[in-house]
Length: 433
Image 1: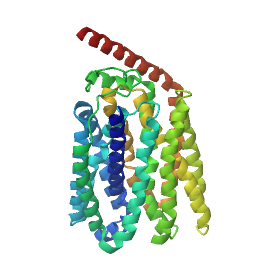
Image 2: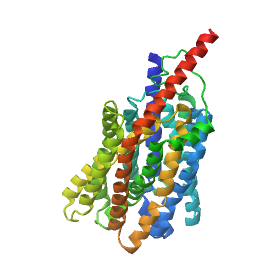
Image 3: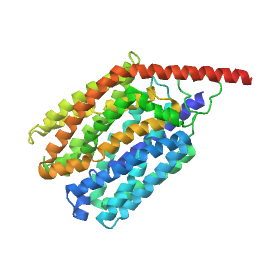
Image 4: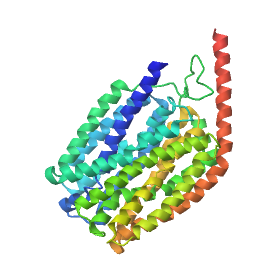
């Protein structure tokens, strides 16, 4: 048991490093937007096509990754995803023309949809009472990766050029592929569920088409999909356009961008863990807890972003303070949504369930950077970022509220299914003995 516990935390450490470096590579293009645009002589609308291309490919790949993870060994597929990350980033670095770069950068989206298997594997090492914390810990890597990308772009991009930076991050992907292949172990599906954890021997459960299709009969799952569709729009717009907004519309220098974004990103990272921890705490008190926390945080984030974006350009101190406060609340929903998907889903289709949810949300939001770029060419990035983000968060909070109302029904159904499965396994093992 102690060896298993040591391994699960070692696995979390490997996954944290994988996601940190992968997010750094994925989000690095944000702070490198201006030099890339200058290299190819393109405008915001064309750069929006680059952003959206990778997002669309990632969205299309989600169902395939989800099925493969529920059918085969998740650990080996994650190693493959890391190899694809390294290879496609290298191809982007050597692209000679804009059309080639558009194609190769789109190919980097293949591995961007590989996280459902990672989260599924984590769910078989950690029970439902603490998954929010673990997912929040792992999701720290998105803002931290954003900051690492910012630091690398600021410190190395101007010296080595953006192509050399992609060579470095692509090489790290190949290293992670080797690390995951040899050191991450597969786990029996469902072994961490309270109803199943005391079984002497776990049954083997694989992807079941009937169970996967049954996901759409769950009211809370349908609402989570709808919320995801609108909820990712703000993230894609902010991720890919906020640096340029600071540079061109608030007239920040590179050093000012770094000094503004670094503390905001650190607070954002903290928000994932705090949000997951608060969600776990509330979940222990009510099955609606995770969704209530998410709904409140999304509403607060919409109000705070509106206040932040309307601070006068000259008042940089107030802008930074409100930006940090906004950053604390807006990631609260992320770990709680993943945990809730697994709170209502059988272990053998969890990768598929999260992949479906992610496919819907990224499929819609993939066009968000392009939409923002089109709005910016006709108005401003201020209008693009604020209008898209606030509208999406207000609608998302409403959907999260309905999910909170209905989710206890689907949670009770899952717990009953797992109890019946445990009784079946005990009877089977008793008969075999």
